[in-house]
Amino acid sequence: MHIEVTQLNKHFGDFHAVRDVSFTIEKGRLIGLLGPSGGGKTSILRMLAGLETPSSGDIVFHGKRVNDLPPQERGIGFVFQNYALFKHMTVYDNIAFGLKVKKQSKEQIRDRVMTLVELTGLKGFEHRLPHQLSGGQRQRVAFARALAPEPQLLLLDEPFAAIDAKIRQELRTWLKEMIERLGITSIFVTHDQDEAIEVADEIMIINKGRLEQKGSPWDIYKSPQTQFVASFIGESTIVSDVSKLKGFESAADREGVKALIRPEYIEIGKPHEFRIVSATEPGRIKQLHFRGSEWMVEVVVGDTTLITYRSLEKDILHPGDEVNVLVHRAYLFKDEESWIMENRLKEDPMPIHI
Image (cartoon, rainbow, N blue to C red; front, side, top):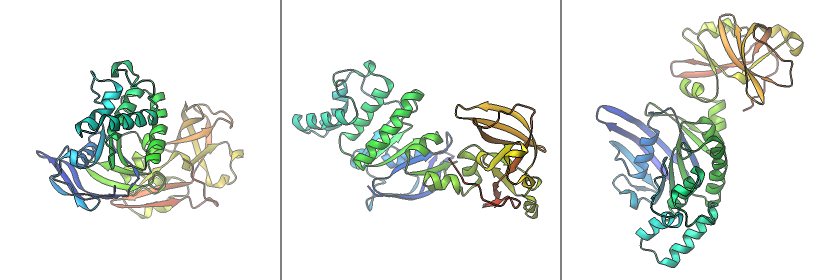
């Protein structure tokens, strides 16, 4: 299903929950609506589903305006955060519910349910009740029930929020593979950026009811268009006066400029670890945090604390150690304008890894 949304607004009394949001989604894409809690993500999803009525704006599915269509006529499947399974019904009957409402024959229902049981890895659990299933299995039942009527659009509201971390990781991979196999247009709401980056083909960043940016996870990470996006995606440090850092003195030419510096844009170590020592400046290790595959390091340069990573293969550093620090680049922001500034003292650009 191709989706086009134009100037969408939603008011709840005096509260303006969604503000002039416009976007298009191509058929078969998996889109993540990402942003902080209360930012308007779920309101957008519920308006697409027909569970909320827009205050203004248009929602168009395949060239047809659907603002006034009830949910059952929009060709959608909806997966709720809390599963919303019928507790007294078996797995089979939960999946079959929408098909029975559409008055399909018993043979059609059986064929469709068993296909979905196989697809979602629930074979052997058809006659169990929801309380006899794990959280991951209940969520798979919810997916299967939403898919049973063969919707053109699948909507998921925080689909992994109620599941523990290990199962959540497995379900992310499973969901992405399943949706790719089915080719169904899908939109899921999340406040977990790792989840959005891992699962989505495209991400829409929603903040205070506005669409801040839409693009692939990589594009949004490497080229944030607003200060909010840059600070929301990935770990970073906001620096109020980046001109104090070596190699960034020219930033002083623009009054009121702030900088955002990502951890992977910073190198720390002893002098022998640097090819261009003249581009570095002194720093002091404030704290180290073990992350399993690497160290996350807080380092103080002047009166600024920066965050970076350090490989476990390199010499171990300790709080209080004096080190050399090289900042390769920074995102600079002033009002609505943003740009990248490279350290003028270093020769070769540093590759970006995420």
